[in-house]
Structure formats: structure tokens, C-alpha cells
Length: 289
Image (cartoon, rainbow, N blue to C red; front, side):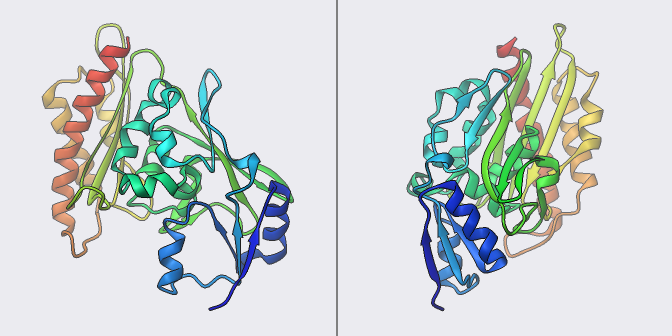
């Protein structure tokens, strides 16, 4: 189907186009998800708004002390190589090498992946695990949306039809906190069947003071295993405690079945990968003290 192409050169032009065309418009960032959807006629916008030349949406990740702000148009490959993110928000750089292939990450953007809201993708799961905040703009004003409220369903985010994602703010790692990303995929570069984002906080005696476990590929949004998290707090991060947390997370989740595996298969992966992720996160936490 034919569509009108709008090449925006400023954020104001983007917002005006989205305000005028509403749900008839699609935003083109890196195009690594939208391009295939257009080719397959699964997306048929009347207007395509290209934001690649909008200076307000680009730039490098910015260290702001307690957090790192990543502009929406930051390429995934640039974020993967960012020393600021590696030091301050290492879970982001731990997960990014698993996003497709380097050729895809050269074009794909951090904001585009998050706005696409694919529950099998790495970045939405990482953002949920880190309690990231999303800044959205429209002609009506600015909204800051917590990650816990941003992902609503399969490929559906909290963004309104006239809003564009401007940036995402990742809280910085604190002393005694460690993170890890672990996933299992049929091949490197494929979407993971199950992915796990783990965060562990330890006190001076090595006891868990906080834990976060969020999963990709097992629900219509990134899935948080709150019962497993709570069971870890107050314990030493022993192998037995990690295995028990994995079992609790698997028991509480009812993943969908598809051609890649049954629900029970995904539950087994949750249990196995959780223990691995927690072990890596605990080791990272000990190094950060």
C-alpha cells in the first residue's frame, strides 16, 4: 500500500505529524522491526514519520549520577559499547550482545526496541528489571512513565498515538549490587525461548537485601517473579537458595506454548536459567562492594 513519507528534522515536526495523523502514522527509527512488518503487510500506515535526523532524539548515553539517560535514537551497537552504561548500568550492556546480530544492532535503536514492546525481546525485560523510566513527548506535553506501567500487552505500550519516546532513564548500580542477563535461544541471534534479568543486592555480611527477577518470552509482557524475589531476601546466596528461587519462579508462571517449546519446557528453562543468572549476579555484587 502507498504511504506518505515525512522526514522530520526536528522534534517539533515529529510531534506535529503525530498529532495530525494519529493512529494512521508509524514512527520509523532504526526500522529493524517495522521494516519486516511493512514488507509482510502486517503494518499498513498511511504516514511514515522518519525520526533519524531529529537531533533532540540522538546522542550518547549521559551519566547523571544516580542514573544514566539514553536518548531514544541511540543505536543499540553504540549502547553496547558505551563505557558509561557498562560501568553504571551493566545489565544493559550484558543483554545487548544477545539482541539479534551486530548488523541489526548497528541500525536498531534502544528507543525503538522498547517502544515496539516485544515481550520476547531483551531490552523491555532489562528496563523492567532496572525500574527504568520512559520520557514521552507530544504536543500536549511531557510524560514520565515507569517501566512497570509502560508495557501493556504483546507489542503494545503505554505510548499514546500522538506520543514519541524521547529517552529512557536507567537507575545506576549501587554498591553491593550485581546484575546478570542469561538466555536460551535456538541459535545466536534468534529470539530467546526464555531470558532472565537478575539483580541482587548484598549487605556487608553477604546476605541478600534485595532481588529482582524478570523474564522474557514467558508472558505477554516482561514477567516479574515477585514471590521468588521475596524468598531470596534475608538469605545467603547459596546454590540451594538459587535453585529454590528458580523453582518458585517456574511454579508461579504459566508460559505459553508454541513451535519452539511447551509451557512445561519453558518452566524448566525458567528454573535452570534463574539459578545461573542469580549466581552471576551475586558474583557481580561481591565485586562491586
